[in-house]
Length: 429
Image: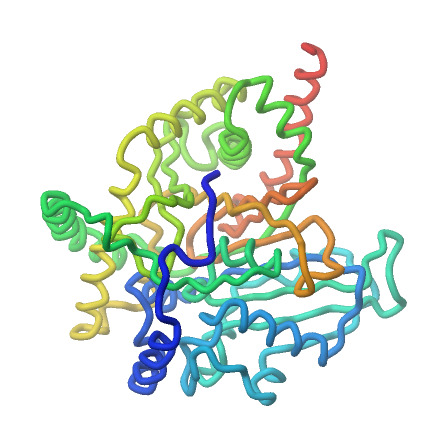
């Protein structure tokens, strides 16, 4: 996985904050990039949650929020009355934090993960919440005294932010595009033509093919990294290829889940080579991949790894740049014809079967995450889309699912598939 940093390019933060304050007085989301605008309108959310050996009270939660907003000033953007870069007043701290006692941790973290629609209800509150549960009778036999969850609009947080904050490191985005690395006019024209062709089809498909009602659910599982590493080394594949393949194979259920022939997917990655055509906020880049389905698990893993290698040997910027062009057009049209951008429009998933996201390693350091213990769970929710977020830590990797409920029972198959592969490795070693 390529490295990630707090800011790609230096910026004058004082000027940025002055400009931000002027802009948000006109419109709360005035500073949002087109990608941020889309995720905000779609009410896309992300979450981070982990158990802790420490307990929490309201004062401690408010202190955590203050530390987070200092390290990630984007948390102070996007709501009515925002003062970008400034500390939250006490009444806001109290409004966005909550704490409750529970008898035990059975069913957590899945028990309290939801779509996060409340983030968008009160326009006068910041676009994130910090919540904690505390075990009523003290730590359990595993030493877990509490659990904390940070839930945010995806418009202001991404996986690399979560990884940086877990290490108590600054996560200010600065300017993510690079004016020194320009996309050629030839490519710009091709992206514009591509968007002009795809945009009407996307608009029509979103209104005709997007389901009216989608029942979504959440599931989280954790595995030891050592076993995954052992299997990947034996098969001579990337660890992410192994994890992607396990998830798709299990959920596809022999062709009954997605398709008997091909699985249409999007996966995300960080790329340190930035261009002037990149989004100015997000570090992540989306890549399209079509995976051929095979009945044999090992063959499928090898095929997934081969497909990823072929895709990344090409121009990995194409899909993201085309998407950036389309989102700019949609945002412009929405100002003139807002009725076209209903909840159903944003629920359309482009007919992709699954989105796979590998976030940077999450390792706890510093005061912000003192007491937190593995496994660490992070995920994303987008209405109508099947998502799996992979979160590697020191010893564990968690798989965090947000998807249509008909697929959730097949998540349980992953552990069995992994055990079968591991037994094969043991026999052959």
